[in-house]
Amino acid sequence: MLTARNECCHGKVQDFTALFEGGKRWKGRLFQAVYRRPLPSSSEVTSLRLGTEPGVRWAVIASKKGVDKRATRRNRVKRRLRALVREIVLPGFAANGQSRLSSPLEFALIASRRMLDEPWTGLEVEMRTFARVLKNSIQEPLP
Image 1 (cartoon, rainbow, N blue to C red):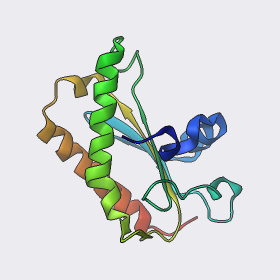
Image 2: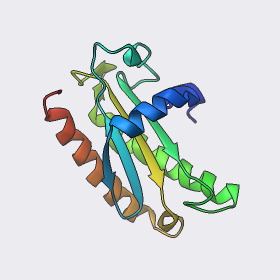
Image 3: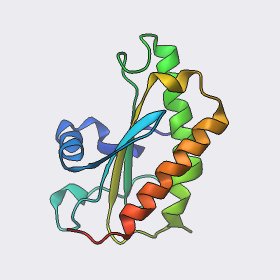
């Protein structure tokens, strides 16, 4: 299980604000995502080597309003999203502990109510689509 330090921002409000204000948005059927590549010269990227994914910071958000008022259901949705990120998204960014990224990457996944009843295969398909979007954004030059 990932600890809080392995996820994006450790709860720093200014990091989330920067991500949501300056990031690109992707909306799928089961979840939304906000992602960005902060400039390497900015002070925001000083502590990006977290866990085994160098240069990648990420967060999972499941709100009472967006998913369910019961914490057990929100926690299940978050566990499923975390597992999918570890299984599908992160392996594409690091090999043998070395980052394949030329610049850092941050993203946040925002769960929707539809995830509660979706089978695992449907979640995998959606996450693979998001992983392709992320890979394409990495190939774009930095502004």
